[in-house]
Image (cartoon, rainbow over all chains, first blue to last red; front, side, top):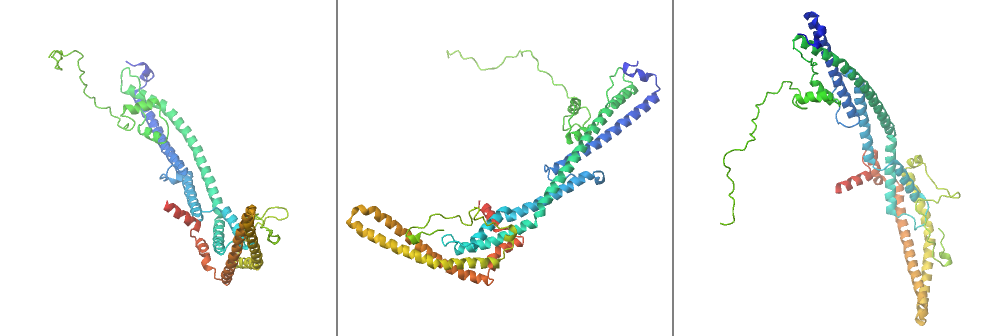
Length: 280
Length: 163
């Protein structure tokens, strides 16, 4: 007896239904594979962005650089930015005093060393020697700053460029999310149809057609890419042993039922502490 | 600075800030461009220091003379007031004032004497430097030129290590 879900299939030859089932299943698998690839790409983008904004220390390994030119560019720009940043930090820690302060101090020292002043305001010999020495040290420091004047511009340029690249990757990521949603939307009815065909072919009487389940590996990828899961997907994961062990698709072995303790009172005498009457 | 010592009074207490010129229309601040400061050579700076020291040295004998006179006058005033004070007890304020003035003049006289000594010593030193012996004064500058840390950075590092 054909149930109401398979009425349209009953009139078709079995071979034709089998062929349709195989084609549908192949299409479902193709979409699944495509989606998995996209999730891996999405994860890669996410990690590159994390690396670019300094949330992780090492960039991800990109196996096919020719397919991810913008990601390679972002990693290279971040490395260049880091290099310039360390150069700037090194210069700042080597000189320790900002350039404008050096110029101010040099001007003051020069004036005190050379401008005529009364004896009471004139620096003594020790101070003169110190100022003379400092003056030329500061002169060398200002020259060092001037030699690295381009460094700040380069650093600004590298920062701007890196942010632009990250923005571009983010834009691509949004498009990717749309593609993923479309893929899921296309896959869902096909999976349902494949389930219906399979149920018909296996001749399950009165079966409510279960859709072909999604590949559980996909959930890991989706979670790793920072995506959310639906309630049904969570339920599927819990059914397969929880969030960390959802690859185990086999149903758990039935555990022997624990015999419930009888609610009836035991007839045996209960040994307890003897009641004291207070007369002993 | 206006000295009122010639009129028998103490010099003005006004002291302009060191290394700073008042910024008025008549006397604009002498600012130097950074490039000018970067072009100053040790040789030129030593010469400028010697020139300033020589100017100062030429003015010091007069200053010393003025301070000596002031000190002599303060001594005689203090001595006179002291003798008068023995006869008249009402002059105690006058005695104190003269004694304070005397002490102040002694201090100023010693300052000038020290300045004279310092200037003589400085002139000897900077004239030696004028002959090109400033190398040891430029050790810090040479270290920075060769890519080393500045003395400020070294001091900061040492402070951090001490903590």
